[in-house]
Amino acid sequence: MSRVLSALRSRWARVVFLLAALAFGIWAVASQWDGVTAALAAISPLQLLAVLAVSLAYVFLTMLSWRAVMTDLGSRLSVRDASRVFFVSQVGKYLPGGVWNIVAAAEMGADHEIPRRRSVSVMAVSILVSIVTGLLLAVVAVLLGPPELREQFGWVAWTLPVFLVLLLPPVLNRVLGLALSLARRPALEQPLTGGGVARSAAWALAGWVLAGVQVWLIASQLGMDADLATLALAVGGYALAWIVGFLAIVVPAGVGVREAVLGALLAGQLDAGAVVVTVLLARVVLTVADLLLGLGAMSLLRRRSRREVLPG
Image (tube, rainbow, N blue to C red):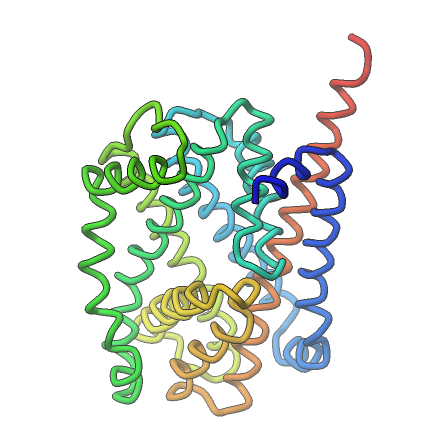
């Protein structure tokens, strides 16, 4: 891994890395294009724009959750700088392996004089925050879903207390300290605080709600009742699907796994064809949102590099 990190410090290696990540992201959309065109025929253009807008807002709130942890650990980035680091690095999650977004965030953070161990710690904590807040909402989905769903995913409720304890700052700071010690890295300069974790969790919860709204908007256009109960199911269902997909680390960005879980949740609300359209379109629109924000952040980085190169 150290050799990989050293290679990524080269400008050309970063360019190749980003192009490869973008290629895998585009492939994730293109490989399902026949299904995408069928899905687009079922949704009005205005509704599709609304779904994309909600997806972009969801990814943006995820960045704010990550930024809250970064600030709490001592690196205060502006929203623009945080967007550059986060949105570009997130494109790396489409590469096989499940760790490349973390590697990219550490290397790009170093450009802002953020120690790499801090960047890795921030990403680990923000992921844990996402898991805990997502589990809170997933429990709701399991309770609202069909009986077979409770039989298959009832374990979610039992894991929640464990992750909640891990998220407590005294426990989390000890775990981070132990991990850095085992990795033979210096300790973090300052510990996480309850306020920082709470701010990150608030942004994460808001993000989960928007992710569920995205699914709900699509499904309601395809026949699902548009009420509070189905909205709660969509929000909790997406969170559950994300968590199960995240645990399948060998699958880039949980492709396939999340769709299967989300489809099982929606099966009682839609017919089989509408379920397929909903889960496929939800995945594709979120991928497009990631790529659009990543490309936008790359554009900002290029402009910044040109300004630095030009003489004053």
